[in-house]
Length: 294
Image (cartoon, rainbow, N blue to C red):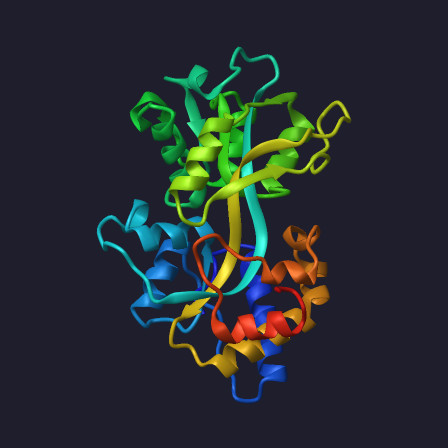
């Protein structure tokens, strides 16, 4: 399995997946290895992996041959095995700053998180859909911990996480340390993004996910997003996909206890349909048997 990048919290979860696969499915062996979402999708299509972590927008970009896949062209031949935690938009500026909307940040130093991730890809898409160019901003693709510190030190004017998990651990420290405001994503841009790009949908950051410095909670924040998910090749055996989906669902509570991103989910959410990316027939059979999908 192509898992998350080096040091990602997801890797511990995927190791748990394989512990359970090997414990409950006698014919299975293997382990997760480090990768990033774009390389994981490409590697799966090329036959390097039997399964891979992806993000719904990255998988969608592969199907469209856009973003990280402009050089490869359209890639297909994969299906969804299980849908994991949701992603959404959080744009943050200091409370005493003059910035009220994204356009106000032209010419300013901002970070979308690490280069090559969904946050980076979707910020560029949003900027373009708003009639602006990437070059209009001083975009600093930094790791989340570095971006957090740069923002707190005053070297960044905004953290523009267009497609992030929640709660995002690096934002917890920002909100506890600095008074902030949230920059909204315009409704027309939400509509355009959801209708134009595979794997993107209109989402919200639920009210109360974060505690702010003054003790208040974040309001509900409309944005765009999707899900982290696990994909397998089209020709992956149906009985294997069925057995894997069964093991993952039966051990959901164990995973939930170890991964904060799963805290707001129920086992039925593992069967959430990702826009534009079909479930593998074997997994779909199990989810339908359990009544998770009609």
